[in-house]
Image (cartoon, rainbow, N blue to C red; front, side, top):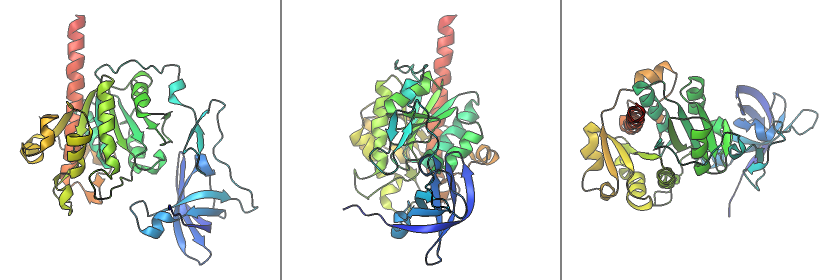
Length: 365
């Protein structure tokens, strides 16, 4: 049976606020300080002195989704329940459906510019981990900073976009032309019912040149072949391809992960590319590591198109934008391969876009 632990506490500090999110600390009845996160669309904007009901499940179990408790409800000192952000009369799709957090949103699919025409050969990079997103974007910008990059956030990890500090930095730096939260994920610039409709909206509404798809923070795994949230990468690669996009997979790979199943090309990537996805997707690999990552002994290379890529050093551009490169608790210096694979995918995407654009210009001459 599912289990959930909760407590009542009093807010003592508010440490961070951003659109859709507030974070701080609260003191429970025993005097223990508990860090918390509140999503304002659901529970309103908390303040010091408010009472707060917290879900402490992740903290209690010491999970990767721990580190913070999450607000279930917030009560003012006078005992009134704070309400979530005001709804628009156009809200008519509910996310987090049939849960205590269900929230009404305006669907992207009703936008006047939304169209379901096939993607015009748009490069679509699909990552396995959220931490790869900045590396993809950095490589694209180093190749051509004029390209418009849209991010589709899936519900494989966190459900609220506001939880991602990486997304906040990428947005503030102007690296993204917009974020679309798809499925049960919410809090992006636009809300889509599915990843397929999000792809259509990224091109028709956001006018994206390149689209990046990946789950929000909180990859879940069980050590089994199919029991990990990164398995969704295969579905999104297939959908992008079938809608007319150029599907590009960013490998999950490592030289530093202590778990043998994730060393070299992770078993997560091998499963997606070799078993659960269709054929003919482009898989970008750093040229110097091509044999190591995609040698002939790996069955998936017979089903996909391996593309060795010369990659740029993305560290300086990320540093200048205040974008942190960190994955599974390790920095770029500690485990560069995961970021280099993402940079290879971004470089390949920008190269494909520019080659397609040059062909189009030549056709119109």
